[in-house]
Length: 139
Image (cartoon, rainbow, N blue to C red; front, side):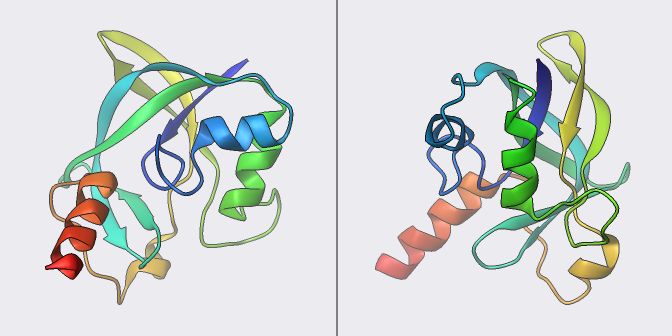
C-alpha cells in the first residue's frame, strides 16, 4: 500500500476520480485518509491544474488516499508521468501533514517550465475554481 496526494482531476467527483480509476482497473477502492494542503502555486491548464511547490506560495488543497501499489501505474498513465521520460507531470514523494500525522505520499507536480504562460489559480483549490468557472459560464 502507498499514499498519494491528489489536488486536481483525481479528486472525488472530478473527471479522473481516483476511486473510479481504481474500479475501472479491478483494484480496491482507495481509502481517504484526509484533506490537507501544501504550499505552492496552482495553475490553470484549462481542463486540469498543475502544481508547482513554492514555500512562499499559498496553500493548495488536496486529498490523501491510501492506495494499492498497482494503482500507481494507472495514475502514471493518467498523468503521463513515465519513469525515465521527461514530461510535464513528474511523480515525486513528499511528507504531508494529515490530521496531525506525517504521511509520505506520492504526488504529481508539473515542471516549472510548463506554467510560464498559464494563469495562477488563486485560492489553491482546483475543485472550487472549476466549479466557479462552470457557474460563471452558466450565467
